[in-house]
Image (tube, rainbow, N blue to C red; front, side, top):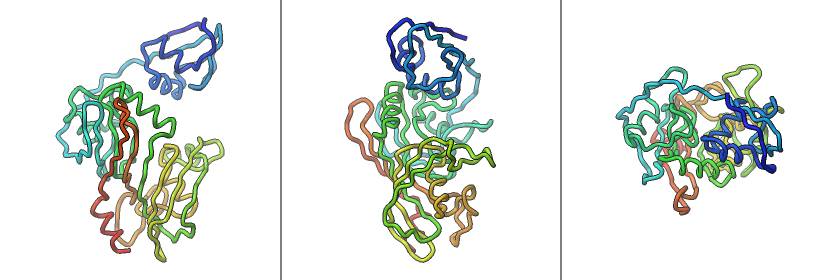
Length: 296
């Protein structure tokens, strides 16, 4: 346990602790979210401005010894330089190890490519991972090779400066050509493994427009302002248009027999974390998904 008594003028707690401790600002924010940092015995927020004589307590987490192995797993690399690597994650691949499963993930594959050059900010089982995609969501994903790149990308995401565009096939004929879904998302009170629209959830905003429609299905282009867990799947299901193949937020039935949601992260626009150059990277739509689109 580490304790700090504030002596300076008011400043955001995440910035203050990044200066006073060995933790990065992103790591501080994560510890605050996990309620491992308290102020005067109470939980806090990254935006809280510390006051003189505040007592900040940091619960130090012991590093777990995890034998995370690099694995030679083929990956579709869309872009790579000394600071980042951008891949087209296939459907069915988990991004990082969890629940005792330490094999076959994107992280295992990235480790074989990048060796020891990945950022360590997200912890030892999530090296380089700046943002995630669900297991059965395919598409473009950025991985940071160093902490500086990781911190910059995290700040861009937090400030809504990263534009993520998805393609989704949903059940039903969406009447609106364009619309915005603004509904808070949090953990479901009925099933803790699921997310749901709830009054106590975090702000979540999803924009969509219709690309194609017929009597039974609609193909959508989707952009998200926020990055809540399962956000697109939850929002579209909530308004009555569940994603085809999604067994968690719909019955999963579809005439094509597709297993896993028809949701693809098609492109991402961001500024290179080191050079500041405008980056736009696209991931080809998977063959099975493209074949369905062609049948419309």
